Structure formats: structure tokens, C-alpha cells
Amino acid sequence: MPKLYSDQFKADAVALVESGMSRRQVCADLGVSRSSLQKWITDARLQAHGMSPSSDPEVAKEMSAALKRIRELEMENEVLRAAAAYLSQEAIRPKRSSRPWKN
Image (cartoon, rainbow, N blue to C red; front, side, top):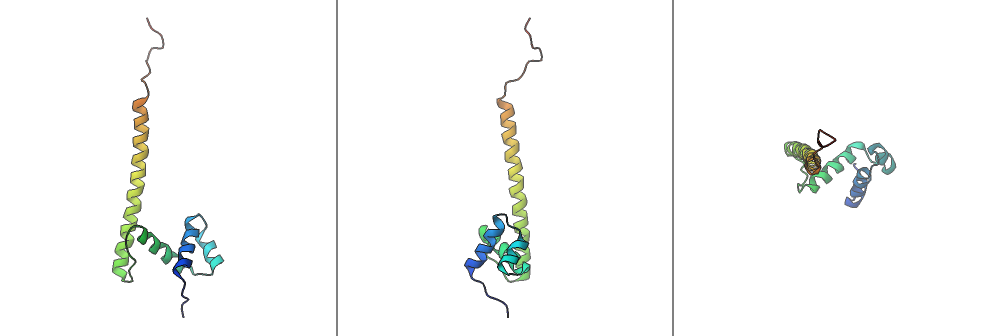
């Protein structure tokens, strides 16, 4: 019979992973299976993006694809922000003269 864990226990396990602790270490310390921890992490990510976890395999697959796309878009936004910041700094800097002396 599968063990039942409280929502708080699951949230604490996910928080440990998000704080930088390895999944393997969290599983060993808390005595949970890797598949259970992975499911809790996925469910937490879905909830963070306003989606509710589903037990239907097709819906779960679509949600997983949506999460992947969200992560890709977030990474693209981060790159664009960094590029915009770099380019704005280039625009602010005064242009250097090709001749260091004046005639």
C-alpha cells in the first residue's frame, strides 16, 4: 500500500530541491522514492504557473510540454534582457575619436 504524505511534507521536499539540495539527497534524507519526488516537483511547477495537476496521461503530457515551453520562453526573455542592457550601455558610452590628438 502506498504511503500517504501530507501536502506540507511534499512542499517541504520540493523546497529542499529548489534550495539547491540534490534530489538524490532529499530522497535519501526523507525516505521517499525518486518518482514521488519528481511528481511533487512537477506538480509544484504546474501550480506555480496556474495549472492544476492532472491524472489523465494525455493532459499531463500536454502540461509537461507547456512547462517546457514556458522555461524556454523565460530563458529567451533573460537573454533578451541581457542583450538590451548591453546595447543600452553601448549607446550611452561616448564614441572615441580615431585620432587621439587635435590639429
